Length: 258
Image 1 (cartoon, rainbow, N blue to C red):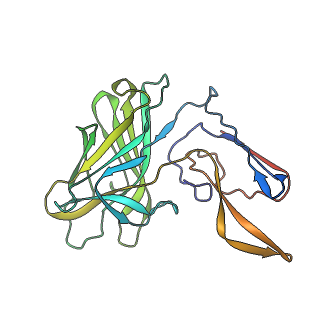
Image 2 (image 1 turned 60 degrees about the horizontal axis):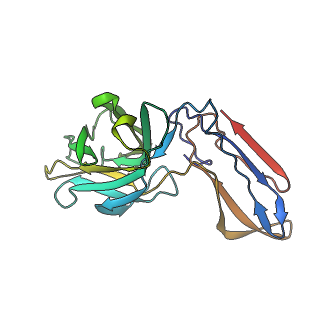
Image 3 (image 1 turned 45 degrees about the vertical axis):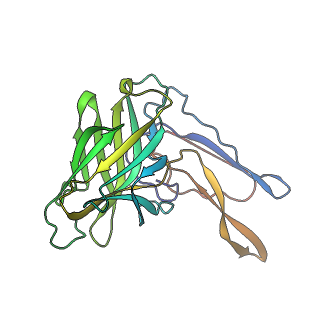
């Protein structure tokens, strides 16, 4: 999902941004960002499905995103029976549905002898909307569950780790009429209390669809000069966005449009 490692999920007419590097005042680098979400071509928008944690066990673990390494963890055991978190706020837009997206992990083949899949209940604002299972067959990597009023819960795996467990992107589609604009949704996942160690994770990582720049903790020498390495990243859900871009020294403008 980062600019350097893009995983394509769906067409998102979000991107028409401009980064200008090299307008320097002293040692300052100025980056200009222009948003094109208001253009008529912006047919579909995502809201970050994770904003803040509410309750549940946490674990440091790997994910498809190098910036996401901490997750909420629920199992089919009473030691970690449920997790809950808040989404970003519902947008105030004229659309029948709103889509939330977040990083998730699901146990698939990590436990020897755990051949049965288990149920996990998915609740929105305290009400159960879906029940999903940690499938252990060919359907595990990509699945969709439909619910009331056209709602959907989907999972698309982007990474399989050495244990055979799956990590990727979970998307929640809800009818906009059922939720107030400007308010976050309270999401919760509950295990089936079967005694199984099988698990589900929601990573504590909020998507940010605007470019961000940060200094890497290292200095680089090039042609006798000591330079600071900068990292430019954004969460990209547009399949037409290039997955790697190098900004050269000096005046430079980059424009990407869907």
